[in-house]
Length: 324
Image (cartoon, rainbow, N blue to C red):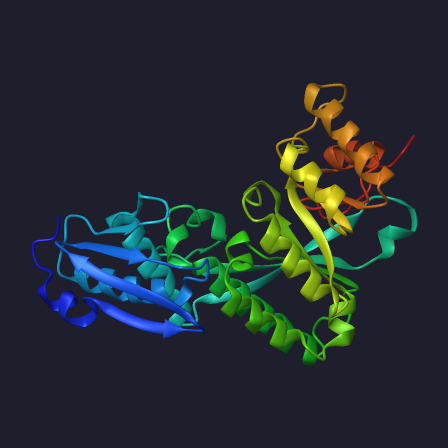
């Protein structure tokens, strides 16, 4: 465990504080941070744990562990502490950027629609701007995703106010499942969008489907709240699982992005082609738009176009094949 803990024990040992009616405890014992939590809203609690881990990590620990009474499992190791610290430093140093990923129309009049996915990128140790998928799982217990969701929405509002997004009529922004459980961050997003009627009318919040299994109640609350602002909703990484079907049946979803496992490098009449075809048929029967991911050339574009997808995204820029 940790050889030197006195410095950070002094900072957070046996902390007890109240936040929005909930009592949190943070205690330390031989390098273990024991977190007793009452509610799913743990953003402030994790900030204390993060501070402790940063301090411990700076002193050269072999391992720094967070334990949670609710799940009784190890939440983080030295690797995740180091990675989460580097991400926080990138955020603090403004090494974060928003990127517009264009969605290419596949059918009829929709080809003229200007649509995009608005995503956040973080500068890593090599100076490269990477997607959150590069570090999300390893740092999942440091509440980075909800913080980045707030940052991205704030950036979106600023860009829209400056007129930069005037040419776009539909914007997809991912709200990670962690944010659904973080009331503080959800409140911040709501405040940022309040009164932005024009922006909300063209905004779709999309959810990472396969991480919603234990969060349908939080999803229902989130959708109910943001529906009042005129925001639409979408699913990403759809694979046709039980949870994804349940979400489609229960919630007002406008658009579905099929997991690129089924749409990237498609070959006609292959198993994935048949699955993608059935998914498109089912989704469109519910009057929802469809998006294919991982489309990198004209041939792949032509295949998803034939399957009936409304939009696609990838490296393909939109030069059409000349039909004979």
